[in-house]
Image (cartoon, rainbow, N blue to C red; front, top):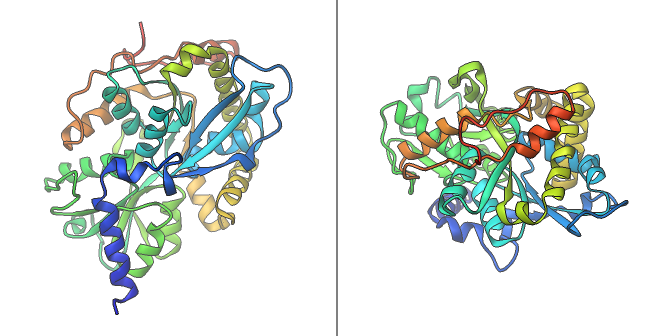
Length: 369
């Protein structure tokens, strides 16, 4: 009879080997990659906008605090009036892009790499980035008994959330910068890149099947609570310690048909971010309450506090860093040189920011004309 550890190892290997679409798609709900969050809905009251509903996707990660808090507190619903929010959570960006393409969601909180992939695969017709949401909140955490320096990562098993997601691309780029070779699709090479659901990764680390992980919060801090140590904070690799980790994207079809709904969601996002930054302790508690609703239990304070501290909430999409991240995808072999002109439509966001007396967001020359 196989041991639990060997069974888990085979399970992780199977996840790493699954084709991206197979991992993402099921008959209608994207399987374990998506979760109905309808319990979070606040009553829709007031005047209905041009759509009865708006379907919003996001992750149960603290890097998606805008969505966690905005839906939990009803801030986004308030701006929508009688148009009802329907929300769904995902494990990683590629699954969410599949849902956006299939018409299962209209707006998504998502990382830069899936945004780039979704835009280029649709030849610029599938989506637009309409706002930023968060910077930072990603760490390489490792077993200190097996890895003491960055060079020790060679030959080890390191998890990322999903093939082609933002952390996967960042880790592949870091490996390349070290001069090591890894096949981007299989994850095999000088380092074994194991694509593992964030919910599974702490158990896999605890069992000894992983030596570390390049993951977003709160997964990174969960691993630290299991005895891992932070080897690298990704923000230290970026100028000014800023890089986009979460964008807001919208289906181009939905934007064209319902610009009033999109503007209302953005107003809710800007209001939520303003509240988070003005009262971070209450916002942190709200985000944790949302995570409890989604997972069945809140994060312990020793996990929540360091995770929250490492994330910056911002309306700025940090467009120049997205351009750099696109280059990382190309260098890792996951993407051909993309034409990103038109990926941003920041007009609605800047209209709201201007009305609030806030600085407008820049698109790094990649905005719609």
